[in-house]
Image (cartoon, rainbow, N blue to C red; front, side):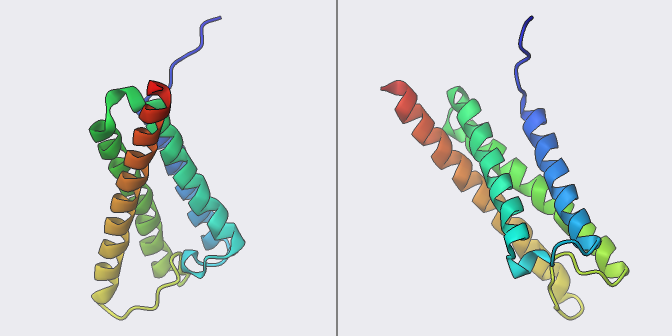
Length: 138
């Protein structure tokens, strides 16, 4: 039986699923809001970072630049899903992010969080790819 190769879309969908599960658990009241950094939240943060690292190592042959772009996309999608569900939660009085920011500053804070996750995803993927290339090259 032939083994199927993983594509970038597999990693993207895995991160979407993890983000939806995390936000759903927060909305359901099973874990506290994300900004509290409780053990439950930290598990999801590390799981997302591990998926970004695995994707960069898996695609290391494509080069550091491509892995960096992929990491940025994964970080963007992950934070976008959480931001979207935080808007839904805010409408129901259930804070997903746990931010108490007045008015339009909430949008600014969401923008900073998305930007932070894009940069974090890109840096983690670039470093992981670079390390994988160095190890595989030797």
